[in-house]
Image (cartoon, rainbow, N blue to C red; front, side):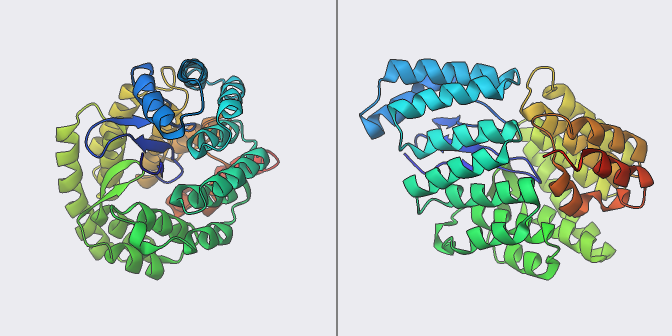
Length: 345
């Protein structure tokens, strides 16, 4: 079984477990996506074959319950189920990842960090283990340097599809190391990175970085290129909410206000919070970003107020770091939001 991979977009992330090199693909996620029941059996078959120690029936039952708890926004109960799984197979890094995410969803970052330390011991060479330590440092303390240090030890040779580069670029962007981020993403040889939210054009990263650097011409050129690529990706998977959200962000960057809002709202319709307590808030966050891009401060701030108190939402340290929220920083209400939630994790 291949190494689980961390998934994120801005602050979105989860773990995917690839069971075969071709199509048997299932997600083992604590935040934001959870296992569907239909995929549990294949996940457990692969894991049982790998470990040969735990009862398939028992693990299946605990994971099924954990997935159900996560989807209805009960991460505390999900954590109990993952702990039960770990009692059966205590050194399984994938189960540790999911247990850790259950605590991340509760905003219990201190416990999550300790669990990811255990995952790092169980899988010291795994990119995911180090990336998780870095992500928690950002969500919990806004410590981009700690995240950068974790990722620095990852060998570039392990980055076949762009997962390492996209994660490093994310961290460098949060640290506002834009020249370094641009250089890193441009070193990737392909046009589309296999990132942690799925396939994403390199041009999107370039457009963001050029925009943050104030180079409007290069940003517009890159975003236009990214638009063409993402429209094709949406055509290939028309019910994929993250792809619609990404297209909405690109259109917002290109100044196509109505189309951007339409795509963002379409994404929330495909994956509403009422149906999925984990992925749903992340799609809502993408809509908030779209509103921020196009100057709809009222709507962006209302969504942020909601997401700052949602278990699977955004955190104050990340809100402070991410340049995507720069259009809101001059609005006094933005600082008021930070002050409102700053004492909370």
